[in-house]
Amino acid sequence: MLLWQPHIMKFRNYLELVQYLQTRLRLLPYDGTPEIKKQGSGTYLYVRKRTAQGKLTSIYVGTYTEELYNLLLRNAREAREIKKEIRNIEKQLAAVGYVEDGLTADVINNIAFARAHMKMNIYDQAVLEGVATSFPQTEEIIENGKVFGMNATDVQKRS
Image (cartoon, rainbow, N blue to C red; front, side, top):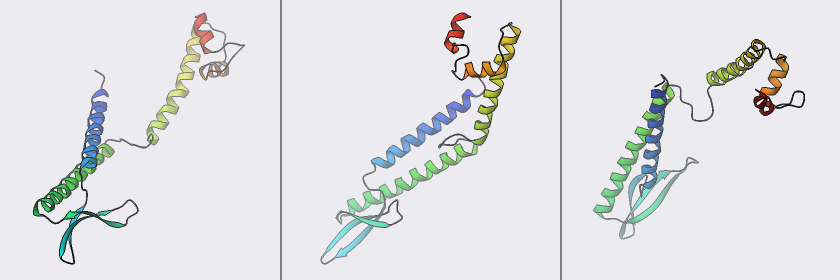
């Protein structure tokens, strides 16, 4: 097993756990803080929640019953615990260098470094094997260009 494989498995396990927790969060019927409102002679239950725009909204749930109120409290507690666990996992991922949106600067630099050295290594190998080529021609072939009417596939077929 390669040295980096345990890290990939750790990332994968963390990401799968976050996905599972987000699914559980979406499946909660009421996500928000329960509130009791008295209007006229009735008592009603609402769930107060902050929207993506930052506004607080109240969503009507039903007439007040102890059972429904306790369900709303359990849902609110479970939602807080799930969100806290997701934040902790995301912090752990960030601590080991995981970036969700794109590549880190180090990875981009490593890719550029590898591309430059790959071209040089292929050119050096071609020279060692006695292939009459120049470095610009080697670069052109690697980047799927044509040199003397031949592309990378044609060069591979001749080998």
